[in-house]
Image 1 (tube, rainbow, N blue to C red):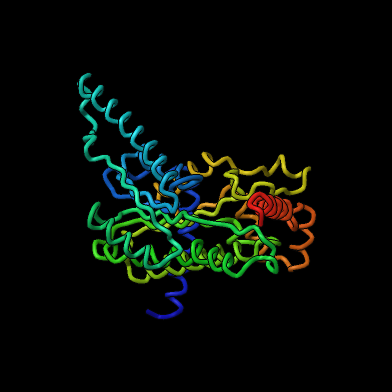
Image 2 (cartoon, rainbow, N blue to C red; image 1 turned 90 degrees about the vertical axis):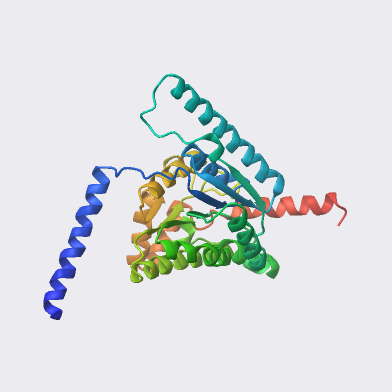
Length: 341
């Protein structure tokens, strides 16, 4: 095709993409079904991972829960089984009432499997993934959610904690994707969800290792998405989740300017996950919560660095992590004193 003609075709496609995006904004697409599909969630023992598990359970997915903490992972599984029992009771009541128009999945098909796995260790991921394939089946939805934070200034952070943050928050996405993507490619079906952070789009002081890991995983996700498009594997969807500060306790103590905080409070975990689920189930490529994060990311990209610094200082975002780091340091000192170190 002549390059001039192709340029106009590409221009039309770009403009059409804007039109489609506007339509999606005004008319919400129908959510797809994940009933009966195997959904694997890392870091499922607490926080957002647990909430993702409950949301997928309500939609009748077969769940595979990974966490390094066996007890908390089993607690999540117990909550999932309770949801499954409620679904079974609702199905039985619907059948008894003669409302059989809608498809009802038998309760025996709704199962949850738990695995203790340290996603920061490559071989542990590959071995556990092989167990999942043998005991459960192939994974259709992969939710890479596990994450850690060291809570130290760079020069005070032990190298081991920096490496741990990078391994869990970034490298683990490589290992889990390499484990489950081949089958998705064979059948051209699947969904890979990357739970990152707004700190993977813009940064702040005092959490260099965390920001680096989240920037890294955002880059990984975007490159993977382009690779799937280049391979014309349109049946495999990807969703990047970048929430603002979520009130899970992970960053307890983090504060922005008190006059601004009422307008930009920490996100409620339930709200964050429900927004992410809407994006996942409508095959939305990316979701930033709240929407203000889109504007912040755009402004960071076009403004001079000194202008960004001025904005950070006005919002109190330049040192927002310092109270959190101080609390972590105090807690560490208290533990050391308690243990007689």
